[in-house]
Image (cartoon, rainbow, N blue to C red; front, side, top):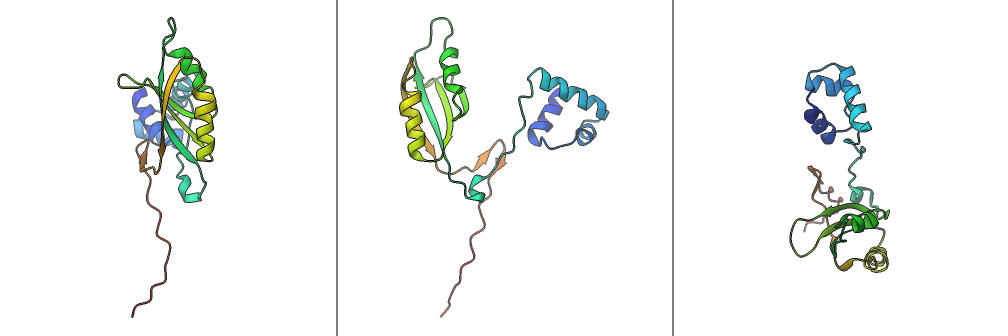
Length: 162
């Protein structure tokens, strides 16, 4: 079976049933079930997640992209500092960058600007090895994981023509 094709289909729509996945790939359903289980067990598939447009339900959240500059550890390089950072619940995603003026990109969410600022100032910046941070607040999401966030329909307004 083409595992890569199966993984691509799961990444595009993790709600597809084993029967739908099997039909799309052209293999028996049982083989799909076994392969998915194997991919989950060996941690190739880490989880399944819906992408929500929270603006549509008017849930107020603040998302920030934080550039973090660090001094790498002698043996573990960036890994030990990264592990300390990604253990915080606020951290949604984290990446080691290859070049540029910073080393790590950290994506976090909070309820308010103050909550995000407190996380950066009190938790992130105080970690030994972190030398500087730069916080960028995400104002609007247009696209995430290949999915386009559609603009909300304008609210109906009353117009008076004269």
